[in-house]
Image (cartoon, rainbow, N blue to C red; front, side):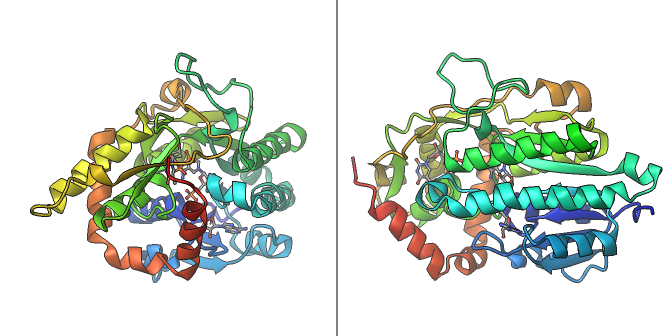
Length: 362
Ligand code: NAD
Ligand code: TYD
């Protein structure tokens, strides 16, 4: 049996990176696309309203851990690839309630791999050779770096420190094993912190943009000197497309923005942008809203990515600078208050209350 030649099954396509990926693929005249998403608090079908009526697009609300559903979607749509974004993705939530992370990230990925293996084994030789399972993962699986340590490369040993990172590491190991044991053509990407449109405002950058806009305290964990490498989400999507088309099965590719920044520098940059774009005559600069709060337990100090492999093998490098990407992002949140209001539901407010009420001011 063959594949449909062009259909792609995306999981988690209603989340932050998944939405950007679906839109970029559909808007560049891409293939037929099936989006399997459970629409947890982090998923929002409205992100994809502009493609909802496109005949190439099919949305299915469901769980990657539902083996029967996954099997029936594979049988029906015969995709040539699975691009797997679906996950629980917020470190602070994984500290408060880790169970969902193990269920979706480990067991859900296992179910998807297992159903993909059964489907793939029944394809004809051409279909099997062309098929790809692209597993989207994170740099957090590598643990934490000291200030002078070399950046994470594809051969850095795994040392996850949060339940989120551990659950993603578990899924990466399963993905690796399905290539080595069964020959399933799996490719894994490990990317640094993304930012850009459609990011759920529990994560640092959108949270700070919206709090700054609304004159609320800007919570900075610990001393604010933890370092992250930031990548504009469209650059991540472009990298995934390169890996999907030309990545070698069984390989992993690190993806990064070459933009290491301390959290406090990110927060002050956002304050300055909001001051510039939404000036308030006579009001104090937004930097004065910065509030140091109790640190995250086990907070990784520094992440940095060595992305030379994907540049060398696949010719990818980031197009956006952090400063220009951040400007675009701040503008997007200022111009999309309807989207913001639609995602800040009661459940969102409960999370914010829980996470920050328990963090004493320093
Ligand atoms: P997100 O939390 O914004 O979106 C996750 C999506 O997955 C949501 O639409 C949600 O409804 C869906 N989902 C959750 N559980 C599901 C399940 N059981 N079945 C089906 N759908 C389910 O996440 P994101 O930031 O877009 O991240 C996407 C992927 O990229 C994740 O695998 C994450 O680990 C990885 N990643 C994220 C970053 C980042 O900075 N955000 C960086 C590197 C890698
Ligand atoms: P986050 O966006 O949660 O991403 P991750 O933990 O996956 O890197 O956080 C980015 C950094 O910002 C991280 O070092 C934690 C810090 N942070 C704060 O200082 N305050 C906050 O309110 C949040 C959500 C994060």
